[in-house]
Image (cartoon, rainbow, N blue to C red; front, side, top):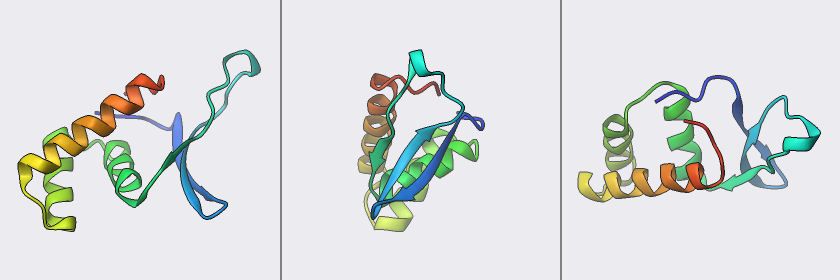
Length: 87
């Protein structure tokens, strides 16, 4: 999975946001707010990690079962796709 450099995580107003870079006015995508976990998953996506690698990372970081982490990663990715993020 790879997001390239089309999107970045930025911090503003005390929150983290996924922002699409170099947008055209007629196809504007508003920033997507994410929590720390979402930002961590995003950075993994940008680093070309697989879904399974992302789940391993979450399971270790948050002390949760791998299966739960897989569901969380899948839900996050599906949410991004529903918002028009190209992965």
